[in-house]
Length: 160
Image 1 (cartoon, rainbow, N blue to C red):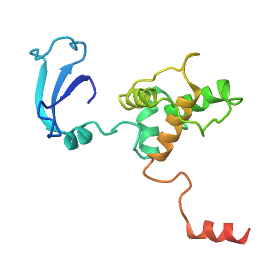
Image 2: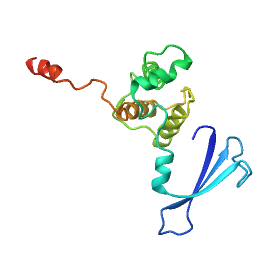
Image 3: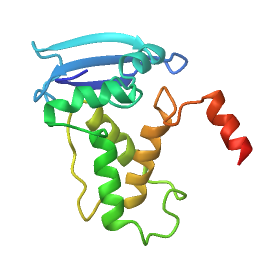
């Protein structure tokens, strides 16, 4: 949820999948139950729906490119451009690129940043495998394949 920080804690009942969820206006993270916050009791299913990717991950490619035009004319989504540029600069000699997994916590953090409209930068300390994992995750979550299935195209491949 853009512009809000969230704090979530499991319920005190260990047999429950309920969570206490507090939404804080950005910047008030250290003030619990402040006037600018909202407190909810939710279960894990609702949390996954509330915080499912709603930004660029999981969106149609065309919608993402149109949305990102606010940064200028785009041919590919920013996440793809940044990942590919970083991999070109720092990862082409990396053993196991696209095969070895990146750090899940960093991949998740970068995904959330891109989904919330940020443009995180990759620096010399950024793990190239995490960036490759982020790119693979983006492509995997596209609702439509990059190369659309077409009967004519399939027949053409079979002829080859």
